[in-house]
Image (cartoon, rainbow, N blue to C red; front, side, top):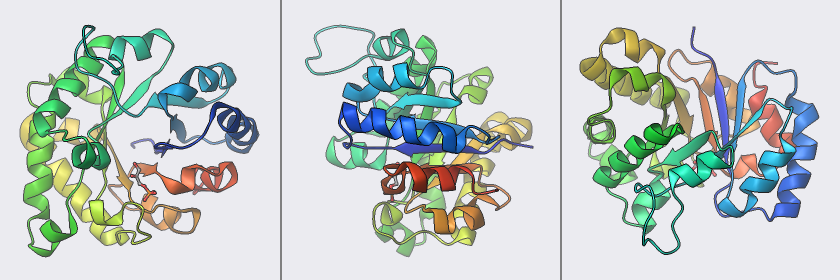
Length: 250
Ligand code: 13P
């Protein structure tokens, strides 16, 4: 049985004082869950959040990183820098980064490799646009994204990787994918991973759904056969709402 992993993605929200407040509220609300809880926060919140989650079951991730170890890349943050302060996860290839910051599949692949190299666990995002879904090429698009993102990754590393299926049309729109749509796409991702790494690995890898997840729809989505939890944007900004999503099975 795969575990359920619920990750919040704060995107470009929350000042340090708000972040500390959030952790204070969330900690008692999720302390008894058996599900894995992760919050992926802006760089400027990382240090405060890491200090405040000590001794709790809340894990911390960043939302991006550079693929090089160090060097003349003004404004960038390396995986090693994140690892050195105690960050455990990093979101890679979010559609907002692909769309607004021109991240290609090749860049995503380089970042995944570097994250693994420094001991971070990547949460790799894939997903189709509405146009691609309407054209009936969803499976083709997400299979290619998976193939490219994981190119050259050894199968032993697979257990450190989480995949997040986030259809772009469902992100921040309130248009959640139906549980059947989400489950089907995730099964296609598993099929692709099985083709590359074998059935055993594809049965084990954690694959989340993301896109307008809220406490009112989390249970029906996360109970589907292939959906192992969620990557939550807007609804992760409120501790109470997020805690209900984490404890969808309570
Ligand atoms: P929303 O939950 O706000 O739709 O965002 C999803 C997302 O992009 C998480 O990474």
